Length: 190
Image 1 (cartoon, one colour):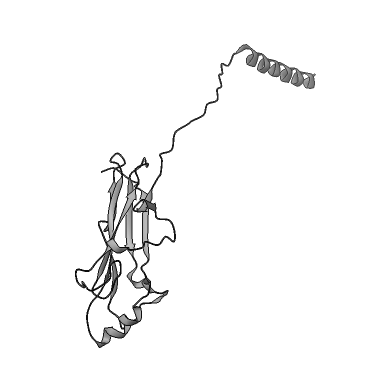
Image 2 (image 1 turned 90 degrees about the horizontal axis):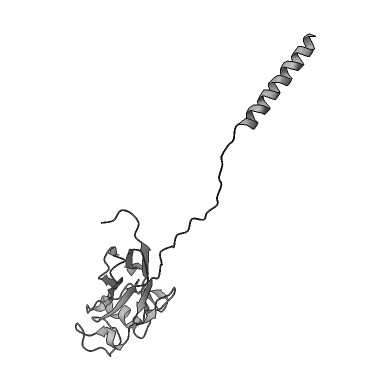
């Protein structure tokens, strides 16, 4: 009988469990939904006039870009010792919906003359950026265009230590590496 009592007790326990689950109702509602948000637009272009500057773009200095203040004896659109060329570049982020920071740097150590290093015995050839020294933050509600100037200067000292190197550069193509970087402003507002 002892075994029957155990079986009976287990049966009663199972019956109580089954009855307790069936006597209580559980309310439950389930729905599915999608979370949707629009990403801000990112439309940034560096421009030489109306032409977009892309990778490996050549920023060519023309007749109106070169001045001969220090050396008035240079053909229009050319650079020679003592002359300077300047060109304005535009950052156009007018279609962008975020704040933009940009930096522009010139690598004066990487200046090439016909794809070769600048002759050591020549006047110094340098590039400078004005209007974009450091980082400029443009507010996305303000139209988002800005300009900066790239200025190339060829030193104009006379003397035997410069003459042969400068003469070797005559008629050459001088290349100055520029890095133009634009990025979204991240962090707390101002």
